[in-house]
Length: 155
Image (cartoon, rainbow, N blue to C red; front, side):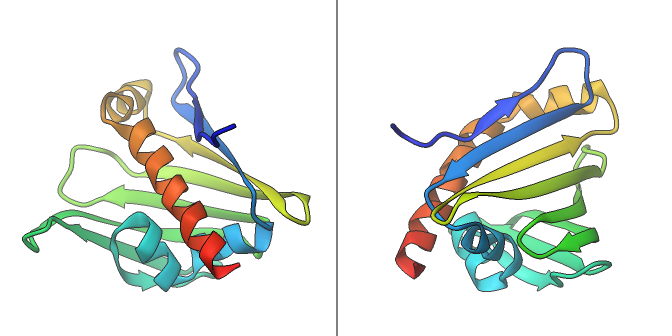
């Protein structure tokens, strides 16, 4: 069965929950979110800064094929427990989206399988609705597919 990133967005709430199971050890999935070289590969972005630690900061920049910057995002890591969790903020520069709070939980199912659960909290129900109007789910699933492909080659 094909692995799919699932997005659970209950009506009248300002959060959503994203889950994905991977046929990879939890340590590798955690590296995919904390090592700049791997993040850049699967997200297709330039990692300007990535301090994978409590109170660390991060900044990513994505450009189009012509080199024009189309997306810059940054945030602060509020909690960091290796192979277990990351709590961070996410803010897009030059956009109408308010900062959001992300809770990433990394779960070991067995030695070769893991689960990622992300809860994202938005400023309001309206902000979440605007995010969900974008091709958010399709893009996230494609990114997680790339993540798995890249990590399988590292394994």
